[in-house]
Amino acid sequence: MSRPGIISRARQLGDTSVAFARNFVDRKRNKQRYMLQDLSGYDTILRDGLMSVRHYHALTEDQVIIEGKVQPVQKQKYRIPLVMVPPLGVFAWIFDLMADRSLVRYFLAHGYDVYLIDWGAPSRDDKHLTLDVYVGHWFPLAMKAIREHSGQQQLSMLGYCMGGLLSLLYLAASKDREVVNLVTIASPVDMHKTASGRLSALIEKPAHLIRKTTGFRLDNLDDRLFHVPGPVLSFLFKMSNPMATVSSYVELLRNLGDDDYVARYMTMNEWFTNMPDYPGGTVQALMRDMGLYNQMVRGRIKVGGVLANFADITANLLAFAGDSDAIVSVPAAEAIIDVVSSRDKTFQVVPGGHAGVFTGGKAAHSTWAISAAWLSTRSGGWDGAAVITESA
Image 1 (cartoon, rainbow, N blue to C red):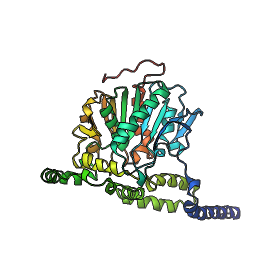
Image 2: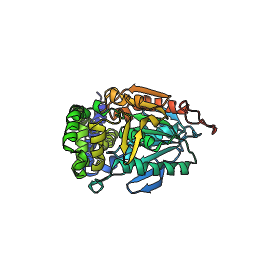
Image 3: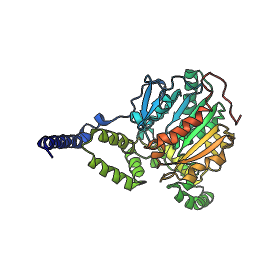
Image 4: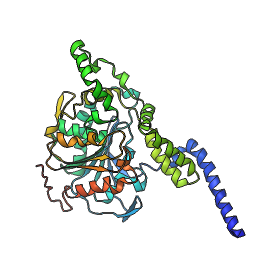
């Protein structure tokens, strides 16, 4: 190597070493400089306690980059808006990660008018929050606000994990037939076929016997006992795939001199490391009705004082499962097909684990692309013509 080449190489190594040292320190002391999430513009059209509803601004660019591919921005909008529904136990910004891995930007680019229900960040003070609050109070408020803001009665919904289950519960309890399309991603309707539900399946009969002979119910216990703090939730999530957690950290150390890599790692890691609390009142109901007695797969479950019957759901349905999801198995997610009355229903297995199937490196070209194409023929077209649903 020539002397100028040696000098150039030495400078590159020096710059990398400086970046390595800076990132090693700053990722702990100045974490916010690495955060790339929640950057899309939006207006808050409703706020009620912890819950709020966002309406995202239309993109001004002519094209965007999504996972390395150029995506032209469709300037016309489909008539039927898309409502995104996050799960509990995460922050809503997981729908709007880095610019090239943002589900929000992807659907905006494809011509959808995008709304998002943000469940907020519960703390220990919110331990009494129950499913009835989410499904019976906040969900109807959010849908009413979206309809008033958009001027459209017909809506589509897309829910990830528990967001899909909340959507199902809302549709069944409210009998809202104006939600014409529903997309669920890794939503476990058959809880006994999830990683955590197998134990529930084993103790269901003994628990029923105890309840019958002694009258004891989980409801008898204080809901504070079921409250899951955010750090505990983060630990449990990481332990669902500990090897992936270790390998990702090893990769970080190998790439600590690359500012872009560190920023992307820190943004994704914030999802898994910084989770809000899971309210005890909701966890109690999940453990009892969905976990222990697996009532969702039976198609009927009480939410508050209302019987939610999934047979009342007729919305067009597209459901996904990840082929390597260690939390929600394929059979657990596929069970949705049997409990709804929809005539137009499709189930897809796509690449990815529990996070990857939703917003991993392959999601844009599998889960997202399939969803956008499926919704495009069911969202009313560009000219305001009435949507025709096979389930009507």
